[in-house]
Image: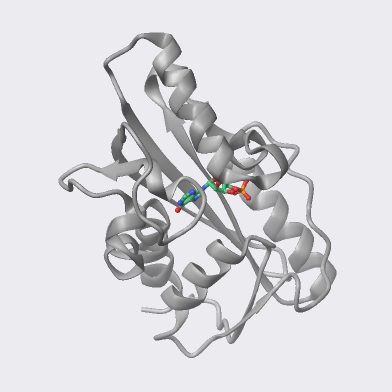
Length: 197
Ligand code: IMP
């Protein structure tokens, strides 16, 4: 049986993520509130995998608030860097300065001397029911790291990621196009199918 979900607490303080999540849930009759709005704490990401952290964030806040809580753990994995920054994508940015983080990443790739710029974004969504059950959905988008930053839209590493089949970065494509094909968009399509369809 599908759960009845009329309100979701997004277990994140990342405004870029929260905006995308609000947009993706807009067509459904569900109230979306953020951790900031309910003065909920930032849950430390102590896991070593996206799924562990997504569940941890969702289950902690569902338990604290009594609402359904949605945890999103995501990141960028670069092949020639052995999958870095991966689960540490947020922490790779000094003082959350993603402009600097992208420069550092482009530099690290250059240092390897590798011509292989393939990378992927992964997103794991965990929707925790305060009664105990947690639903997990995964989405991935393959692509490559651009030679330099391009575009002003989106957030995080969007200006250096070119999804397969496109010649523009996520930051040039803009949210509507990005949400159709992104890791988060794909994970959401699965969530919507299971929870709201
Ligand atoms: P966390 O899930 O809160 O650990 O943060 C994931 C980090 O990965 C974000 O802070 C971004 O830097 C990066 N990230 C995740 N999804 C995206 C995306 O859609 N675009 C750009 N960067 C992203």
